[in-house]
Amino acid sequence: MALPNEHQLTFSQYTDANSMFAAIETRFGGNEATKKTQKTLLKQQYENFSASSTESLDSIFNRLQKIVSRLAILGVVISQEDLNSKILSSLPPEWNTHVVVWMNKPKIETMSIDDLYNNFKIVEQKVKKFVGASSGAQNLAFMTAPSTSSTNNLPQGLQTYYVQMDLKIGS
Image (cartoon, rainbow, N blue to C red):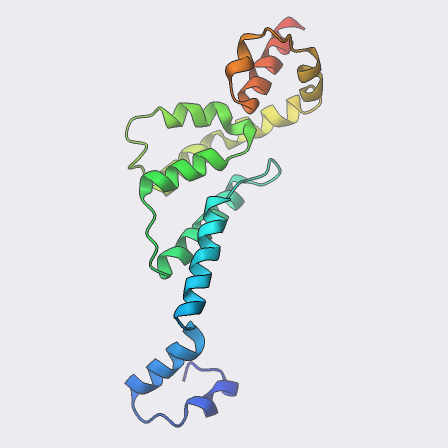
């Protein structure tokens, strides 16, 4: 009954539910080679996952959840620690100060992705305001940053943050 009309004739030859289900699964589920290819592609998407500055937090989490869910359907299990690490490392640079704080929190390895999302959702407006307020000063910050600055050992996004803060304080 759930099959679309164009497929009902194809499966009408089966007389019992088990053989019909097996045929439907073979037809729509793909064979082992197809599943292996899907699994490989999804693993690559997961490994290369990153977010852009223009993307909302909702969109970032939804895209990652979709990849993880598809991998789970194919039997690939991703640990909570790896998933949390992936989401933290793939957020855009404007999130770096919050990411550093969260990476050092106790029990981050076992926190659910929903809890992590909810905590980041709380500070999302602050991050958006910071990006909006500093977008014009960002290029200037890199041009005027002294080469002997103590921020040189920090990741790129944190350098931007601290140099911008120096400019705001110094202005």
